[in-house]
Image (cartoon, rainbow, N blue to C red):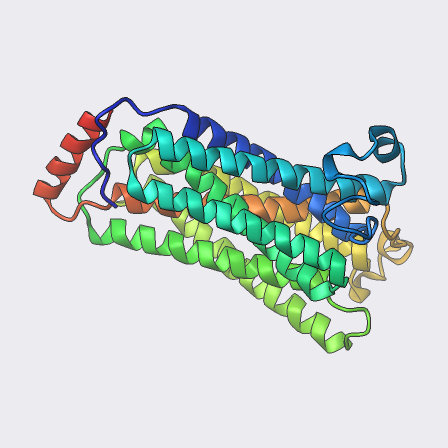
Amino acid sequence: MNEQTPSLKQSPWPHRLAVALALVTLPLIGVGGLVTTYDAGMAVPDWPGTFGYNLFLYPLSTWWSGPWDLFVEHGHRLLGALAGILTIGLVIAVWFGDSRRWMRDASLAALGLVIFQGGLGGLRVLFDQRMLALVHGCTGPLFFALAVCLVEMTSRNWRQAKVAPSTPAGRRFARNAGLAACLAYLQLTVGALLRHIPLDAPPQVFRAALLFHLVFAAVLTVLIAMLAIAAFRGPAGHTSLRLPAICLSLLVIAQVSLGLTTYVMKYSWPAWMDQFGFAASYVVQERSFSQALIVTGHVVCGSMILATVTMLSLRATRIFAARTTSELGSNLTLMRVAA
């Protein structure tokens, strides 16, 4: 990925808007998780308006003090609209403040994805289709990962990155990080399927989805552990890879804990634990606040893992991009000029 040497100083606004977009998208995913948890997707039956009102003109008192389902659904729509506005602003800022042609393409990709995601959300309401809700739930984390990558690509660290000569260990690290990102998204997709399985589906569908979810989780945990070790030790170790590797490891630990707690709070303890009093007397409280908090936290943490490992893959590819010593020198010269 070659950088274009700018003739003017780069504007800080693309990075600022990318950060704002990422900060808005994460709670957007969380509120979307609450919509699914409380089955509030049809709390507002029309789209793009809200009970006949313009989305932004719906009475605040009615929304704020109305039913909980209405609060989370309309709040989700408002956050989605804000994400769309920020994406449009980011595209404008990139086109006027960033000379890199590929960065403009990346901003347009973000705009296309946010339009697609908004359209999915609207169609889910208009047709009341559970499958559209599933696709909508899988696209949101993908957009968040792209937003985090935009933060990375517009940052000063990206322009001033200390690239290293390409080595087998470096290329292997970048490939494994990319594989982990793909596996994280696949794992997230299976998790979304678990949350959107139709009520009339046979039990075998749920068991198969749960099995794949657990298997993918185990493989992903091992792969991320290997990446964390490689970021600190061996030829692929690089200072700029260590912080995201630490964050990724902590997120995985939190996600495993949230996943186990989610299973217990939604489906109770496994049958073989009935010999213990606390397990035998446990009663699932469907749609309780504690259950919604844990389940939604599991969804948000999964999106953060996907975004972090994608950013790690992008950063590793950037660092180990130079294939020869001469190319390394050329890239360093270009980055000094860009800085």
